[in-house]
Image (cartoon, rainbow, N blue to C red; front, side, top):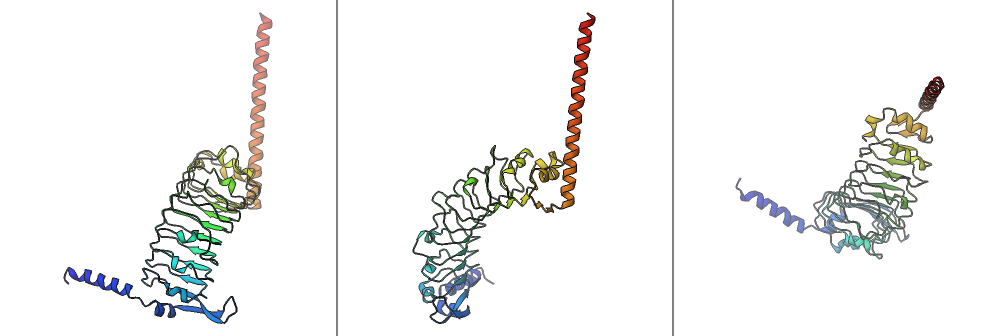
Length: 328
């Protein structure tokens, strides 16, 4: 085979992509035939174009206004604005493409019904304004580090930003309905700003750069799951600050340096946070609670006995000193 052959094949592939018959492609991949939302009749509502060598979208999609779910994952598209006027589009999956920005989400007149967007594994470097009524947004595995223009969203409940380059929590503001925030494998060093997440239930901060918390951890009444595994927390005292989370049920902190310095950290955790149901992968059973209570009691008894012995020793020294003075 000549050296020119691969280039020839590549050119042919590029030409075939540019000649995609979108009308035919769409028609061959429609499903979900049902009565549509406006009761105007029966239409196909699901479009699956996963790994179809699509590198650009056209206005042809506008002809299929009753589509509710589109899967375009594993292609080479760079923008999604061509889909923004589909009035009934609820779910959009564009994972694994070459999208560099989501500017069309800043338009209040776009994506009026969109609730679920998966844009993981693209080439995003910034999280900007989101004016569409999203409930769930998945931006895992991008390169997001800028959030200067992100100003929250009143409807968003689930925000996934794992494996990006985010360094702070302070810009997660104006998210009154946010229940889940997943920020594992970023560059977060401190948790300033977490107090703004008033509705948060699940917070994942695994594999960041967190060394500790503020003197008083914010009272987050709704949080039930907190993941801080594989950070840089060096002292168990930092974990004791989490007592301000009154309804915490699951705490994951395995892989922090304090483990090797505090061999009884599990029992200590159970005693200071009595509502916990699971620590790492260990369920807090009745037997484990009894063991923790017994450990705490023994520890207290030893401390009391040690204090008593110290006091006795001090009194003995004082008596000896007084006797020595009297002999003089």
